[in-house]
Each structure stands twice: as C-alpha cells, then as structure tokens.
Amino acid sequence: MRQNLREIPLGAQPASGGRWLTRGNAIDRQPVYARDGERIAFSSNRNGNLEIWVVSRRSGDVRRMTEHTAQDSDPSFMPDGRLLFSSNRSGAFEIWMADSDGSGAHQITHDGSDAENPVATADGQWIIYASMKPGAGGIMRIRPDGSEPRLIVVGNLIEPEVSPDGKHVAFVADLGSEGEALRVTRLAGRGNRRARAHAALTCHPRDHHGNARFVQNAYDATSVVPNTVVWVDCTTFTSSHPLAPALFRFSDSEPPSTRSQKYSQRIGAVPARAGGMTN
Image 1 (cartoon, rainbow, N blue to C red):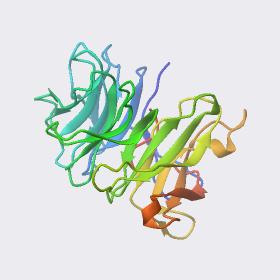
Image 2 (image 1 turned 90 degrees about the horizontal axis):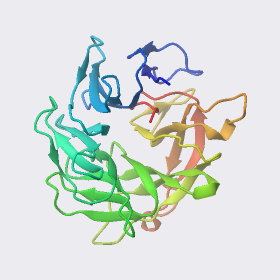
Image 3 (image 1 turned 45 degrees about the horizontal axis):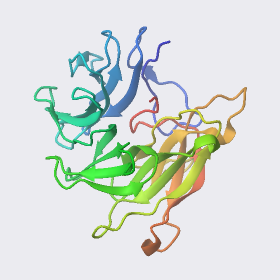
C-alpha cells in the first residue's frame, strides 16, 4: 500500500489538474498547511518508521522534522510556526510540541491514554485535541504550556479542526454501527459549561473517512462562501463512485444561545487547499 500527497486548486468545478507533492512507495498522509502557506507537514513511514516530514510547496524539497524510535503522527502548526504532533514516546500517545525546525520536542499533555489530533487556535492561546481517556473522553482544550486542561465536548470523538475565526470546532463522531458523523460546535464558551454539538453529516458504511478541514473562503459556482469545511462526499457514495473530498457549508441556523450548527448545503466536489483530506 502507498499514499502520496497531491495538491489541487480550490475553485474549479469539477476539480481537475493539480500536482503531486510527494511520490514513491511510502504512506504519506495527514497533510496540513503551515500558516504561511509555504510548507506542508505530513506523517510518513518513508524511513521505515512513522515520523513527521515537511515538503516545500516552492521547491518540492522534503525534510524530516522528527526522528525517534516511537511513532510520531498528527502534525499541525502553532501560529508562530512551532510543530504540534502526537507521539507515543512516553507510552500512550500524548500531545507534543517542537520548534519550527523539529528540535526541542517536549510533551504537553499527560492524559495517560491516547491523546491525538492536536490543532491550535488562531491566536495560539489553546491547543484543541481528541482524548480517549476512559470515562472522560472527547474533545479537550489545553494551554500550550500544558495548563488548564478541560473537556469541552464529551463522547467518542476524534480529529478536531478549529475554524479560521476561532469560533467553531469540527470533529468526527464515531456512531458505532451507524457510521461516522461530522459535527460542528462553537468553541467559545463561558465558565465550565460544555458545548453542545449537533450532527451535520453522517457517513455509511463505517469506514474511517479522515478529518475535516475548514476553508477560509471557498467558492461555489459564482461567489465566495464562508463557513465551509471539506470532508469526504459520502452523500453520493456507490460501488462505482468512490469516496472523494467535497465542500460543505454550515450556518449558525439557531440563536447563538443554543450553540447549534448544521450543514445547509453541499457546494461542490472540490478538494481544498486548506490542508488535504488523506488521514
């Protein structure tokens, strides 16, 4: 099995063209753009072990960011360019941070059970991640220095993604035999009140469909569309129509006090520049 990274421009319908960012026999996955748009971090087993790598969008140069006998995956970036990732260097998977060149790696969380899929808010004040802690699992937030951990959405939830404006979090909910659901909730909350999350899109069969990515401004056929995520288009899945990325728009359709968001429209099968879909 092999997976390579491909970048496709946002805005074309149907999606066409694009370019390969990596090629070879390795499994390259979990791509994410740096905030400056010049680099893409991804996980890969190209050296025989799962590590974090970065590819330059300009030159195509590929550089290894982590090197350890443990497994490093789930890359993302802090606003200042520091690297976030999950690793089982200390036993269970925990959230780690390194400098922008991969040096100085240090552990952020100490959940004692799988903590994965870190992503920073736009202001760099919080790291959002998925915790599999027994009896207290869900979407967590924590300060970059490891202080003030708090569970914000309860459940068997993975792969959070924070919106560019910092107001929403998209994540994937495991519904067991019913499949997976992409959910969106407001991130901003007061006190210790936990956010409510509402099902937006449910996928069958129960295959893993990867994480969603927010898009700052997506395009439908004629205009800019805000509040958009890219996820697998399971709405049209058939044996002859494989899963592929598509754009979905959501709206705050209920009063803010209800913290209810839902998807209002599928706006096209267009892969997003916002980070890539392979997980």
